[in-house]
Amino acid sequence: MPEPLLSLNALDARYGDFQALYGVDMQIISGEVVAIIGANGAGKSTLMRSISGLLPNESEQVVFKGRPVGDWRADRIAKLGVALVPEGRQLFPSLSVEENLKLGGAVGRKGQWSLDAVYGLFPVLKERRHQASNALSGGQQQMAAIGRALMANPELILFDEISLGLAPVVIRSIYEAFPDIVRQGMTAIIVEQDISRALSVSSRVYCLQEGRVSLTGRTDDVNRDEITAAYFGLAA
Amino acid sequence: MIEWVSAVTQGVLLGGLYALFAAGLSLIFGVMRLVNIAHGDLIVFAAYLGLSTTMTFGINPFLALFVVVPVMAGLGYILQRGLLNRTLGEDILPPLLVTFGLSVILQNALLEGYTADPRKLSAGTIETASLSVGGLSVGVLPLLTFAIAVAVIAGLQWVFYSTSAGRGFRAVSDNQEIAQIMGLNKAHVFGLAMALALAVTAIAGILLGVRTSFDPSIGGGRLIFGFEAVIIGGLGSLWGTLAGGIILGVAQTIGGKIDPGWQLLSGHIAFLAVLAIRPNGLFPRVDH
Image (cartoon, rainbow over all chains, first blue to last red; front, side, top):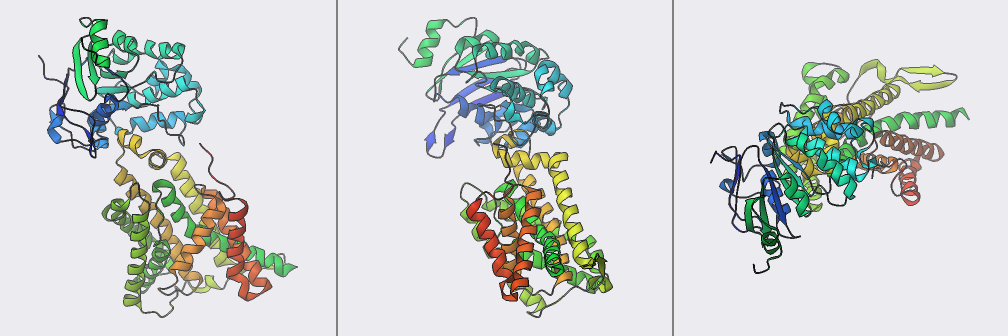
């Protein structure tokens, strides 16, 4: 097995007294697309916050590119090559669409993603580049949020609930862009409540239940019943 | 009639100085939601820094700007990263208390270092020069002050909306967590914002010192004028802050024209009137 790009080692994430994750172990290999599924409150967003550095942990609990980064600030982790498409898009309302994208590129990492490349992926953003980001529709905002993360030219990109609150037809058009995003060997973690959508684009899956990994395996190998059991905690 | 036109003109020009008092306050609040109680004392501190610079090098106060502006900016960055960043969080009380303490420290340090005697910066003949426009006599110094204020506001506007640093200020102001995720170091961005604010404060302090005499106790009053100009103009709007300063200045000079004792009072009344009728100020930022 090659050296993992990201490993989580017995990660116990806490918010003060409340513990959200219990001994989560995870290895992500470079170039993989991994889905993380689980019910509301299972700890998916906490996992994203821990990897991206918004939630501080012990140093060795999060190892990225061989470096223990569990206690690093989020901006340092971003510069090392982790980008997040946050739940709920969270574009900057004071910034235009193009300024949001440029801000994403402010980490100063080189790579294939530039304004032109993002506009090539989502042409509608180019048409609306000078508009305020909150003037966009939900789907266009999601495209801008994805574009903003890509502008950082990350090695690992985290997608947190990108289909939440969007119409099915919009979700489909966003997922159609997915192969273009990961084609160049970018590693991705997709957090979704829409299980079939997540499984359709990923090669491996982790299921979280009440802060613990309840199932893991290759997407092709896990069956629906196993997922249902792992998802809801029903006795298999 | 001409006396009233003259009073309004003087008020407008005075408003430029108030806008300079206010711009730094507004900038800091906009970027990091920090109300800097020591702002007025920092203006006075800059005036004293100007005094020492002019005396040490024997130069004109306007030349002293080239020393005082960078020194104040540097102090601002250090102050923010060394002290004020530690006070920022969910609770708005700690930064208020700490800057209040800073205000007390500054006043007493200035008293210790420069005594309570009123001092003034001497800019030479420009102080008394005036232009005559259609029977109206306008002082060159107030005119210059106003022109500098407009230039500073325009410059801040440019920094905020046309540079990558300004993009960072607005992003951090919108959403600190997501800005961190995008690789912005919040502590550094706040440091830059305070440096910029104190650079403006330095200009305000020098212009204040050239216009009137000052002593270590007058910071509080300058804070109030700046605060009122920000609220009248509307939070988060730089041009609104200039408008707020002008309204405050005009209210004061008209009040002073009616009765010299009413000068300050009428400024406060104008402020209260705006607060009562438009609590968000005249030109609030609209982006949500």
